[in-house]
Length: 120
Image 1 (spheres, rainbow, N blue to C red):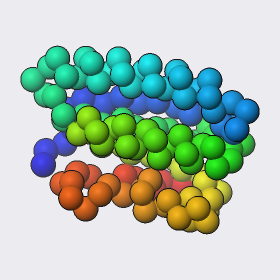
Image 2: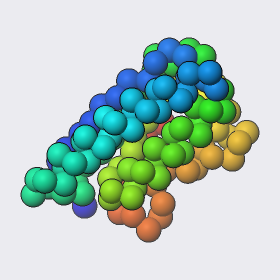
Image 3: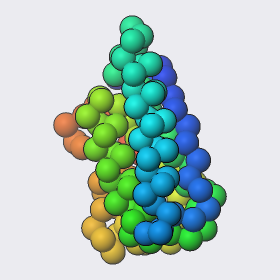
Image 4: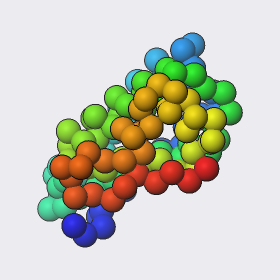
């Protein structure tokens, strides 16, 4: 499979916890839906990636992981690829504790797409 032709870059806020995730999720959903709508109208439909820059995240809890899992499902349902960059070590550890590190850091084996990056 060739490299994605369209890319959406989203930077996560410094705080993503139970108290803040709902408002950020709404903004994130709107950004993604606009991107998916634009991408679907071009000849490169399905050839895109959504990259989340997690480097600025300073405080987070399992709500952040739930949001990332939901975004991964949404992106995959549009035949896209979700990548995470600058992932804090603490987030990797929390994902391991909750058993979602493989879900967030790698694509399903049925897809022929690049592996989500894990760059602490």
